[in-house]
Length: 88
Image (cartoon, rainbow, N blue to C red; front, side):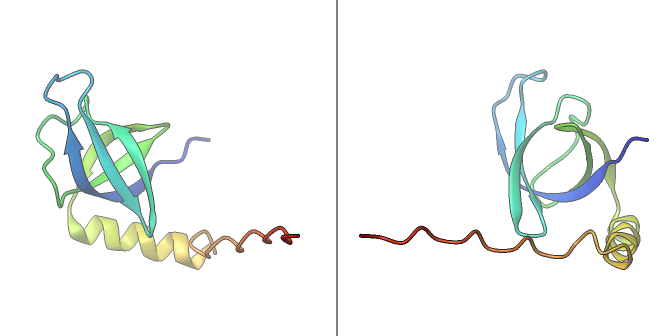
């Protein structure tokens, strides 16, 4: 089974069509994502991301439905904070 996750494009880097990347926010976690398959995407758009590639642009209603389903599954729960190492 494959999973694609929606995220909002907060910055775009590069002009080359095959290497253009976007910094995408996934509910507080940001990652660089390849935008080669969605050349029409601009900052502020919501994209569907699979294995580091944005594969389509989503409208806000679709994104909201997907986030609601992920929340229902408990997939949007924040990760626990790592324990800090004691300093000497």
